Amino acid sequence: MLAHLIPPARHRYHGSITSVSNPVRAPLALSARQWSIAILLFLMILLNYLDRVVLSLLSPVIRKEFALSQMEYAMAVNAFLVAYGVMYFGSGIVLDRLGSRMGLGIFVGLWSLACALHAAITGLFSLIAYRFVLGLFEPGGWTGAIKTVAERFTPVQRSLAAGVFTSGAGIGSLIAPPLVIWLSVHYGWRSAFLISGLAAVIWLPFWFYATRGTTTRTAEMTGDRSLQKVVPRILRNPSALAYLATRFFGDTTGYFFLFWLPEYLVTSKGFTLIQVGSLAWIPFLWNDLGALLGGYCSGRIVQLRSRPLEAKKIMMSMAAIFVLAGSLLQNGSGSIEVLTAVSLCTFGVGIWAANMHAVAAEAFHESEVATVHGLAGSVGAVGGILFNTLVGHFSSQGNYFYAFLVLVTLQPLGVGALWLWMPERLRDAVADSPA
Image (cartoon, rainbow, N blue to C red; front, top):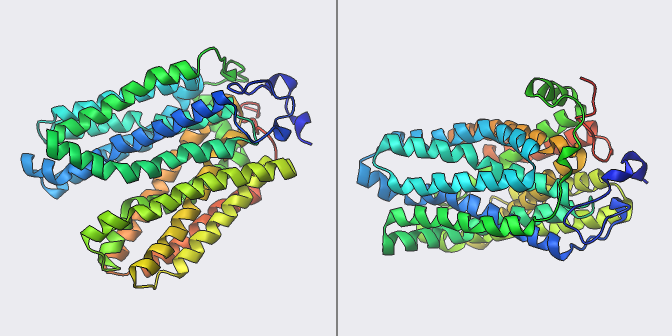
């Protein structure tokens, strides 16, 4: 149905066993090569998350050793966030120029080195410097993953592939606390940074081996790709603006549960720290299940209706319903009721994330998909900062009701932008739009 919109030369999806003459009608099942790439992306995102949270898990020990105040620790955290927000866009530009194979390898190697450097912390200034460097390179993991999905998977497969690698963040949240604390107790806190950094370095040869002998289509550039030309083209493209709006509103839900869930359970629902340690993994497990199921169901809808973007809009609309349902049940007081309500929300967040990342791979020209995805990620970070400020205000008053009230409006606004301004056009070519 949509095959006439893509020149035949662009019907190959590297990483699959054979070329695909009609990518919309292609099977959902991944080839052996594609599975290896998807699993490596999953491990990469897991390590990305692990390297990011080591400091937060060890902050009490590090602050005590170097006599750092909470405000000084906050300065180090903000150094990471500033670099991360800026380089989310910058990493997309780099990846669109280098391609996913080399670009992702470079980013993983550099952030692994930055993580390992944390073992050499001597005080506040070195901590701030290392966190800033880590923030410069970590965004390349997410933009590199979606660039890979755009290059090596068919439209039917992209949501499933995105669901696989997105679940890496949830699994990382399950294994990071026990692993980091165990390393710190037995070998000292510096070992946790060293081991986390080395683990990502070990990943690199497997990545280059799995992606060997394939030629990405990044060479098929169109138009002037200088930064001065690319950004105005993106900002004049209604589909790109719709995607930026989706990330601005929709990313806030994921940030909320990532940064505020333990605080919410303790201060609002009366959980003890022991209960948080033993039970808080449950919502993140449901987040992973949502990502995998959301990606699979999206692929099945594409097979049935041959409309890739519509499938993702449908699943993201369903995700908003799950978040709404979970938010409406937040009045529960028992641990089972509370965890059930929160898990409904995180299940919806997982469905949302798998399809939201896949939208970029589906809607934009491959030569600029990482640039658009990166710019949208930076916009999403801004939205997250604004919403987190509201949450901080509401939580200081012990009133999470208004936080959830705002929360349930954000995803409908995000997916509404897609329904209104992103038409069903396979590979909406930002690069081909008039300068």
